[in-house]
Image 1 (cartoon, rainbow, N blue to C red):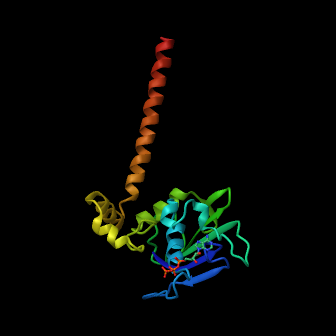
Image 2: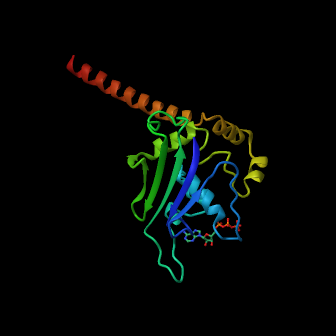
Image 3: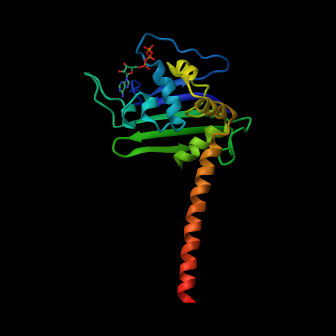
Length: 202
Ligand code: ATP
């Protein structure tokens, strides 16, 4: 899967609709301090399903919505869309029906986030799994935040292992395992209830 375009609308400092074309080869983003370079990288992480407001340098997730300036009012929503070239059909099943894939995340004040894949509503989990299985995603080691190298050097072995697992594309397995364990627990609880009912009937 290759990212081909990132669109932002009302996301942090990008109040007006903005398009970033990610061409073949190396893309560099240059600009003066505070012009929004890191915001672009955060938009990429956010559309892939980031849930930690702190990783977006905010106190709450709604802090990603344009907060207004002296000359422009605040916005009520923020939207980021990521276009993916899927001509090699590398997207996981469920997302692999076309040559192009567009994932959209929108957050509305007091409502929260909603996701779409090629205009169809999808769950946050589906989007997170799509990118985790493709060895990318909100926690991808390919996205290097400011200060992250120092964090990595000082990290405990367990934290470093997580990074290797992200790179290997197996981190989605932990989520699936957790969900399977929850299902198992609820099935066990149901079986106990069935036993009680059978006992009462006997
Ligand atoms: P540097 O080179 O110093 O690291 P940068 O180009 O990476 O800077 P960013 O950190 O991406 O810049 O952008 C910071 C700018 O984004 C600040 O001007 C800040 O006011 C603005 N900003 C952040 N969140 C919002 C928001 N919710 N609404 C409006 N502006 C925001």
